[in-house]
Image: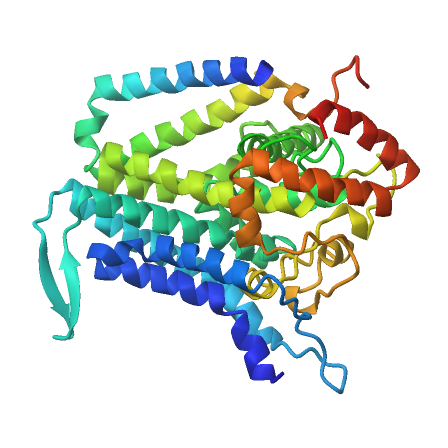
Length: 381
Length: 71
């Protein structure tokens, strides 16, 4: 497989985010582009369920097939792209609240753009923005594993969705406490995706809150200060809140609430699917079997190999294009397909009851089995 | 139950701030950039306040995989 193709395939999500933004620019029915692309994603992911390609891999000389400069540049570029997506949405919101008369204009005398927006179209634009702001979180996650300037970019990116706390919680909590009660991002058996969304989001924010309380106490700095990274994280969201309020008033607040809910729901859905029901004894090392790998074709390319969770948790600071299959448990389905299943908890539990029974049999240590027995009883598994 | 209690208190806190903003006429003045920044700051503080309330009221209980009696 040519290097050009390997590098291009990881541009799928950025390209679709740009297409979604263009849909908002064109207006009318095109504001639903993001929603339509998401549905198409579910269909393609399900149709290609049996294809499990390898990661980017190496060439004959032992160099990565991925172009590090290109892939890194794309990650940094995602910040201005997300800002642009929000600004375009905000313009549409402004049109709605100022009751701009519906009409048509032509860009460069040829591209038709609908002026003004109806209530239904505003809903479509909100959902499209929320869905692709949420998908963009994968880049925030990737950069959260870096240090210095890149880490700040990651925080700013997550701040656009009101979740800048994620960057610290993910690296210093999730990666250290994975598959145990101390990791709010790991869902125990029996929990629904909806409950997990709430608990994981709140739990990760709580982690940073407590971490900062302890750190600031240690350095004799007041909690209410600019040194507080929990506070600074939320302040990163202030420009976004300001723009939504300024452009839309109450409607703006409602749209922001919906966009943040959708994007954070997607983020927590990923956490849910990556570690659902897996167990690790406290004090025992993190192993490959504490993550569900997900390496189906569309998921791997769209989510920039984020599904290779076991390798990612083993080598957290390794670039996504270097991750590979390490023989971790694998549900065999892509994230889009699994997401739809997770939305219906009885179906999810019926499916995972069987998968976790296999995990208990094939992967669990004696200590993990003891915990599994107790939690299975509680969850009715 | 601890989560439910916390969510109830969060709802009261949010409704109080929303009522306060309404009384000040924020819903009519939002297009003024100065008002918008004040409203945005109030909303952000409400959000952070909600987080704080949840942490304090719900505590560790929602995150425990087993009740103390089951552990």
